[in-house]
Image (cartoon, rainbow, N blue to C red):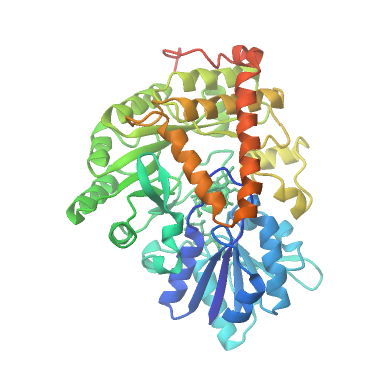
Length: 498
Ligand code: B12
C-alpha cells in the first residue's frame, strides 16, 4: 500500500523547524513491513498538493496534528485528500485529545487515538483486504447518526517491536539547527511517557502515566548513523523523561562510549533521579544540556499540580549540573487556575535562586485530557473552543488565551517576556566563550527556518518575528511596576523553608 503522510505547516513559529518524530516512527514501521511511504513536511518546502497527490497516488493520507498550530494547514491538506477519494486520518496529541473537534471537519474521516504504528499497519491490511477500517482498534469516527464511535484502546506496545527509525524518509539535512553549542542538532526519542501525574499535563491520559524505553542499541545506532551519514553533532532527546533508573543511564553511557560516537546531546530529567555521579557520567558521554521541569516555586501550588519535588534538591541539582559542564534548563508555568500574585512571586523567587538563566516559562493553557482542564470546564471558569477555527488560534503555552489566574494577563506577559529577554541577552546563559551565543543561534535558526519556503514566506514570517521581538522587548522593559511587584529583578540567594 502507498501512504502519504503530512506534517502540516505551523505558520509563523518562533522555533527552528524540527524533524517530525511521530511520522518518522510510523513511516519507518510501515516501510519495514513492506509498504511505500512518503512524508511531506509543509514547513520545509513549498509543496503543490495537487501535483503531489497526482504523482504519488496514495491509498490513504495521514496527518500529524500534534498541537493546535497545524490545524489550518491540516484542513487544507485533508480537503485535497477527500477530493482524491482516499481516507484521511488525523493523529497525534492534539487530535487524540480532541477527537470531536477534529471530526467536526467534513474532510476528516478518522482520528487515530494514541500510538499510530499498529493502527496504521492494520489500516494497510484492511485496505489490502478491502475490509472496513471501522473494525480497526484505536480509531475514532462519526457514525451515520453523527455519533462519535471509538473502536477501543490498544495496549501499549513494546517499543522494541517498532525497530529502528529510517531517516531516509526525511530530508534530515534540512532539520539540522544550531542549539547550545551544536551546529547541527536534530530531535530523537529514546523513551515515551512519564510516570508522573501532573495536573496540567496530558501525559496522564495519552500515556496513562506509563514509561517505556526504546532499546539502547537502536538509539545509539541511530545516533551513530545521524553523525556519520548526516554530519549531525547534536541530539535533543524529546522524551518527557530520559530515564527513571540509574542503570538506564549507565547502560546508555557505556554503549555510547563503546561505539565512540562524537555527538553531544541533551535530555529531560526528573529532579532527584540523577545524582552527581550519574550527571558526571552523562557529561563524560557527551550530555551538554539537561532540562528539569520545576513548574512552580510555590509549595501549595506544587501540591495542587502533584509535582512532589524538594526545592533544596532542585537548587542543588541545577548547581551540580552547571558545575559539571551541562547547561541546566528549568521549566516553569505561570497562570495556573486561581494562581495568586503571592504564588507567582514565589515562582519568581525560585527562578532567581537558580544557577541558570535558561527558563522556558509557559503560560498556563488547559489541555484536554488533564485534571486542570476537567476542573475548570466543570466549574465554568473555562469555555473550551467550540470549533477548529477557535482552537487553531489557541497556541498552547504561549498565548494568554483565557486567563484563569487571579492576576492580570498583562502581568503574565511581563513575567514571560522578562525571562525570555534574560535568556536571550545573558551572555552566561549558555556555556560558551562567545557573547550572546544563545541569541545568535536563535536568530540564525529562525532566519534559516523562515527562508525555507521562499521569499514571500520570508517577509511575512520575518515581519511576525519582528513583531514578537518588539512585544518581548516592550513587556520586559516598559512595566517597572510589574517588575517590582514580582521582584523580577531581585536576585534571590535562597528561599526559606524549602
Ligand atoms: C518533542 C516535542 C516537540 C518538538 C517537536 C518535535 C517534532 N517535530 O516532532 C518541539 C519542541 C518543536 C515542539 C513544539 C511544540 N509543541 Co511539543 N511536544 C514534544 C513532545 C515532548 C514529544 C513529541 C514526540 O516527538 N514524541 C515522540 C514521537 C515518536 O511520539 P508522538 O509525537 O506522540 O507520535 C506518536 C503518536 O502521537 C501518533 N501520531 C503522531 N502523529 C500521527 C499522525 C498520524 C496520521 C497517526 C495515525 C498517528 C500519529 O503515533 C506516533 C508514533 O507512535 C510532546 C509531548 C509528548 N509526549 O508527546 C510535546 C507536545 C506534543 N507539544 C505540545 C505543544 C503545546 C507544542 C507547541 C504548541 C509549543 C509552543 N507553544 O510552541 C509546539 C507546536 C509544534 C507543532 N508543530 O505543532 C503539547 C501538545 C498539547 C496539545 N494538545 O496541543 C505536547 C503534548 C506537550 C504538552 N504536554 O504540553 N514539541
